[in-house]
Image (tube, rainbow, N blue to C red; front, top):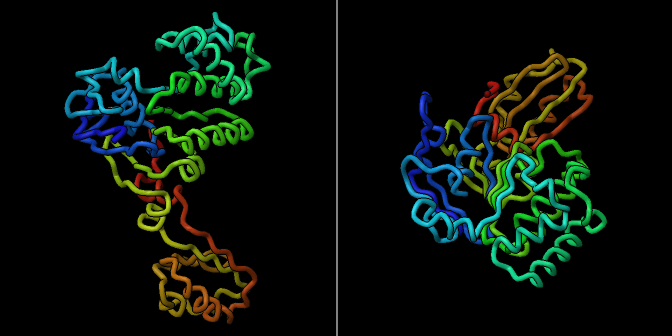
Length: 310
């Protein structure tokens, strides 16, 4: 087990409720596990506890087989961390940020130099090897931070909003790098606000809110079990000619909403549903039919609500 969390609680002074409230989860070795939740849900606090930066108030946390309270140095030796902020050493070149990181973890000069060259090539940073980090683009900074985090070959990689603020091209490039790390067997635990990122990178997800886990499962399982089902939107020329009751009585229909141009129909996703809905709407002179499958965004909103969070 790469990460094992049992009944974790973290409470800060002068707060109304715990940032993390009796949370339990496990992450298997080689798994990519994602944390989704609104602002203030407790995601960053959870990562901070796992990486020994914040002590837990109660409960137990084990990372790479080591307890975060009893053996914090052993935990740090086995993890890589990429925070939401730029933590590169601006007084060192791009290459030196990697080289000295390896040396810090006990690698020899020869090993550190070889690993630095390997990472510069892998993350397409060779042309910037001698440059200071301040001249790098946002995408390059994140690539360098991830390269540095894995330089000492950690068993578990923690990523807190790794692609926040990046342009689409840089985000896609980072997704490719993270996918390669996952395929190479690196255990990844990441927090993200990007549903596409969670859907594409993560083997399992946990949706958390107010410091508690609401649900856990693979992206496909969460969409199947917690989504709203398939939504069918039918646009017609004459809505008044269509029997709403007939639509509601069709197999698999959960709800029918009358719109200005037709009907929005929430179904259970059964394959036969559309075959019954189309004939029921024909009297209204069908102009268009759109079918939308459930998404992680649907699951997220269904579980956490639409209210803005601070």
